[in-house]
Length: 69
Image 1 (cartoon, rainbow, N blue to C red):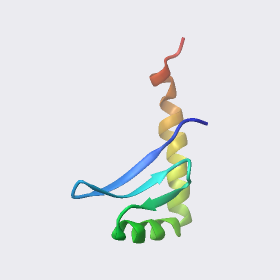
Image 2: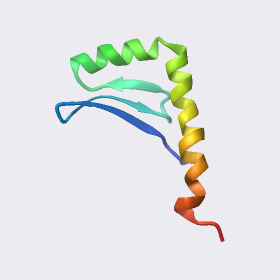
Image 3: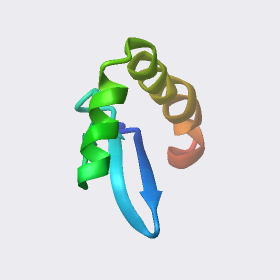
């Protein structure tokens, strides 16, 4: 449960929006990022796809980071 998947969108070295698997939604950090986050959050397939990335990427590779005895 302590594994977190974070996906960030950047423009011109500035983070505009971020998806956090613990929150389960996008959060915008600029005016444009807030608009994009609202758009992405209104799309259920986008949210479910990002949530699935935690299972696919993070949980699949956890043995590599913590090692298998």
